[in-house]
Amino acid sequence: MMKISFLLDSIDDGTVVLPEFQRGYVWTRDQVKGLFQSLYKRFPVGGLLIWNTRADVTALRGSNTAPAVNVKLLLDGQQRVTSLYGVLRGRPPEFFENPERTKAFTGLYFNLEDETFEFYRQTKMSGDPMWISVTDLMMQGPEEITTKLSDVADMHATDLVRYINRAQRLFSVRDIEFHDENISGEDKTVDVVVDIFNRVNSGGTKLSKGDLALARLCALRPAARDELRATVDRWGEAGFNFTIDWFLRCVNVVATGEARFEAMRDLSAEDFGLAMKQSEQAVDFVLNLVSTRLGLDHDRVLLGRYGIPAMVRFVVEAGGSVSDTATQNRLLFWYIQQAMWGRYSNSTESTMDHDLAVLEESGLDGLIADLEVTRGTLRVRPEDFDTHTIGKPVLPDPLHADPCQRCVGLWHWTPAVAASPGEGFQPGGTSRLPEGTVVRPWVPPPPGQCGRELCLSDERFQQEAGQAATK
Image (cartoon, rainbow, N blue to C red; front, side, top):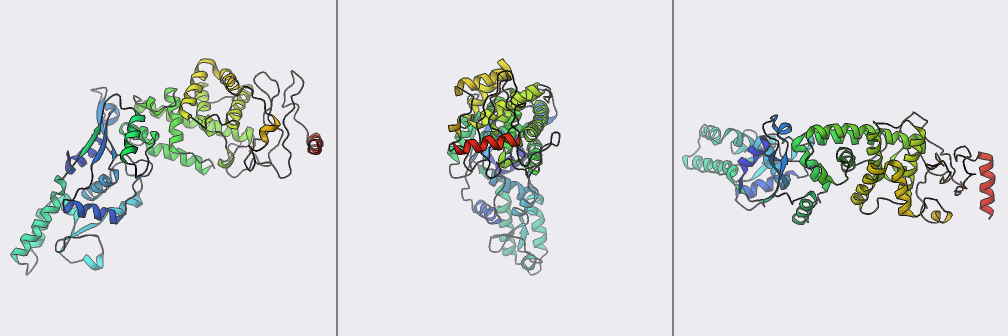
């Protein structure tokens, strides 16, 4: 059991971490009023679900006296605790993100006569001593209310005692105890905790593994969510809509070499910050690469985004960029292939872990070879286009060379709108086939000749496209 006053103190000193998950704070004023009405009447308001996990002391309290300390991560009860904190403290908790939402718990008043809660309305409450601020009561104590009531003219003694008792009852809400269910133990992995939460909270918003991993990181680095969101928003302004979970996956891959968020369990705040910076720079490089080389310059045409974390890992290991054209070609060749065949459409984490292990052991060539073993062939056949790309974006023709310089390109097309080399990714472009264009499977050129050198001229393409259409 945990008293409300102790719970809020624990949030202030960092012992209990109150993260904002993806949903954030969504309660309305009516829900906040309902919570305090129930507490005042001593009705049950539900328990808390808490995960006991570890956090780095240096990052948490600025001390290096011990390698780690346990923190209590609040999983279920966020809306109630945020509301209580906002009303009793008169300000949002540290993890609160949206200033506009503070209106939901700002200005709650209590009527000493009819024992109801309402949010402040000047025309109704100004000058009426029966309306008292709940926040003022909690922060100043009932003595201040007693003094003000004693100064009210014609106040009968019995009424004064009744009102003071009601103010005392409201103030003692701080001493109400929440029943708390604690999850602890080394066997309680991210997967296990997510499953427990979603079972308990089956009627509410589901918790993702990324939510939980980020919540734990916020105990180490409180600004982590803001930093991740700022980067994701920057990409959004450029036309690429990624989620925080997706970017966190890239950071995880860079920091640990693994896809599963559980790998971040022992990651320090400093290592996380470095991996986040490296990941941001590598994603920028990859987006510029696929924009300038493939014409995939905005979200609607970006394919295979779950293949990008592996590319990010490769770019970071290469020093933050890849300037060699042949290496860029091989990297983009793998990207195109994994996107076309839905490499990560099932078992994303296990597939990504497999690819990262191959990349670590055998490099980019091994990654391409492994994909070929999985597929049987990386050659694109006419029947692959029967239904797969109907009504969908298709890839342009920047590459026709495999790692051995044998042309096994996809098709020939110069996009109508594409970023110029060095221009970077720009929103609003298009990578769809112009109306009436014939998609023609690439015919391998003579051995030893690069597909790029043999890209068909407009005249030859039109001639061959016309011949293909009549067959």
